[in-house]
Length: 196
Image 1 (spheres, one colour):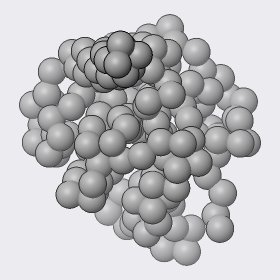
Image 2 (cartoon, one colour):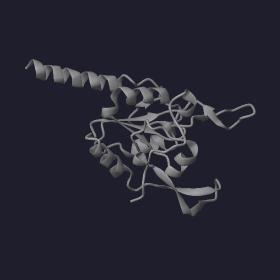
Image 3 (cartoon, one colour):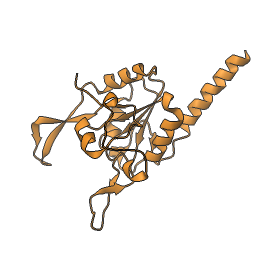
């Protein structure tokens, strides 16, 4: 009986440890908010992954080609893009390639959880480039599908743009890359998204 109680208490402490990482404030922009209301900044996401990696699926939702040119952290568990560039279609408003939703996004998340011996009861943490354009919609896509906790990294991998000075509009504010966290341009093939 004492062993069962100890296991129940240990599981409770592990859950509390993941929950205690909730520190980043809710973004003011409604487009960056989620139905989960669970937010961490890059440093908190790193700490969450280090402390509870076996209970957290850390997902980079950027297009793999974007990651190849902007950088990667091996702290993520898997790259599952929420949107990908369609090189057969053009977005004339921006002028860039059209971004299309990954129709397998949710099933790929579920598959990644299963491969790691996890379930939808475990925490999912999502990072995109800047924290909201893809991160929040990706989290919201998982709403109502059985997932219990989905966090968004509010400052993303590259962070926000500087508003003044010689480097105006460069992504040098906050984010994974600007917080002294581990990253490089070398990709881990085992974690990168491959089209099936």
